[in-house]
Image (cartoon, rainbow, N blue to C red; front, side):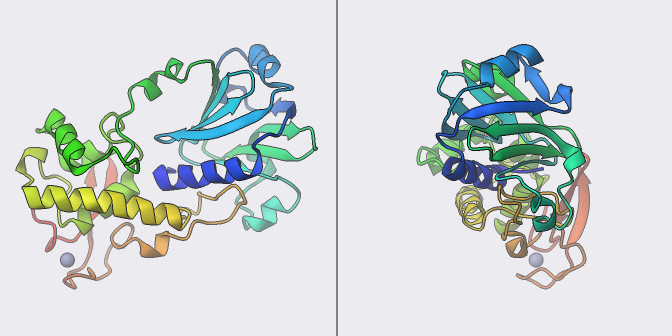
Amino acid sequence: MPELPEVETIRRGLQRKIKNKQIKDIVINVDKIVKKPYLEEFITKIKGKKIKEIDRRGKYIIIHLDSRNKLIVHLGMTGLLIYPYNENSEEITEGKIKAKHNHLVFTFTDDTQLVFNDVRRFGKIFLVSNIDEVGSIAKLGIEPLEDYFTEEVFIQVLNKKKNSKIKSFLMKQEFITGLGNIYANEVLYRSNIHPLRPVFSLNKKEIKNLYQQIKLVLGEAVKLRGSTVADEAYRDTDGEKGKFAKNLQIYARKGEPCIKCGHSIEVVRIESRSSFICPQCQKL
Ligand SMILES: [Zn+2]
């Protein structure tokens, strides 16, 4: 699933490429992707509108239209926004993007196209006048790459859920938003913290380390345009892979030696997700 670095990369790509474009037409091939409002209203309210700014909140992309309505996109597990979409797109993505998964196609007045492609079909699109109309956005917590996310703020948020296990805490979007399975694994390993440690058991030094690693790992991953891991699902708006996967030190490295101590990396299931750990560096 795209996490903060991947969604931010897509946001930046859209901001650079589709800002000020006017939507001429929209074709919806899979109705269920549009969650709000009804299809007819969705189409009427979008046709002819211009794209203003493109923002992000957590893992949501927020496209501001000149009507003051906002088009909100959640990429789900495998959603992609490809621009400009054309006959070369399938080739660029080594066949990963197939036209049969183009669920939504925007055509702009310059006849270029933006496509929402989603193999697994968990993606969602909303058109709203106020972003808080999308319930899950209203509940989102802190943006970890914003300046207001200080170590002090991190401690305050940790105190809200002291009995939680640290990995599930990091992945809950209502506290800190943007971390999913890949980056939660990564920041915990780099801070030498076992994913099942309760929040209250973390000492000052561990909290400081974890705070710094969240900023560092997410920041570096954004710079390298996100992670395209083994499932190959993630692509940026050009259809290109992210380049951070090779820098992942623990995620999907089962059986490889830990770069800190040499012990073999193990995988444990936590809340039905794979957690990669070094049992020597991350003790319970
Ligand atoms: Zn180790």
